Amino acid sequence: MRGGERLQSGSAWDKGARQNDREPKVGGACGPCLREAVRRFEGCHTRILTICEELEQLADGLPALPSNGSHLRLARRMGTLLRDLHAQEEQEILPVLASALGVEQVADSIATLTEEHRTDEAVADEVCEVLLEWAAGERHHDAATLGYMLRGLFDNLRRHSARERDQLIAPAIRRLTSG
Ligand SMILES: [Fe+2]
Image: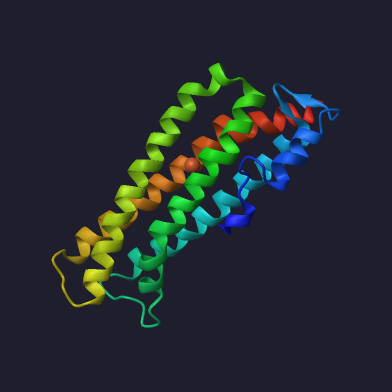
């Protein structure tokens, strides 16, 4: 994510949100703020699901690695990309959805989903480490183990995204469309 896109306090987006006091409210959030948060949330998921597709293609091709080096590019950027997307969700998106849906109602969901972010980041780091070892010819793990790690990671990321969609995005859209 580009730093300028972040919805930090004092940003143009944040000021715009506060200036929209006359806009219809959804729970404790302004309607346009919630709509923008949902759009950003869906954008995060699109990027995470693209990573999942890349991981699945890699797992399907084992024990061979792509000759075009795509696994190296993935290994070098995946950890940072996941952390950026998770930070965007936690700092800029989830607070808006919590305001709209009720902080107490979604507190447990958000705590669990945030824990899952940390777990997925740690697993992604391990996968990247093994991929880089493989690329360097240091194969301390066999193909079956690497495949297991890759599948575990993309399965978790897909399940996590589906939970966020079911528990947060879908209710937020229902609130937006119910007027
Ligand atoms: Fe998430």
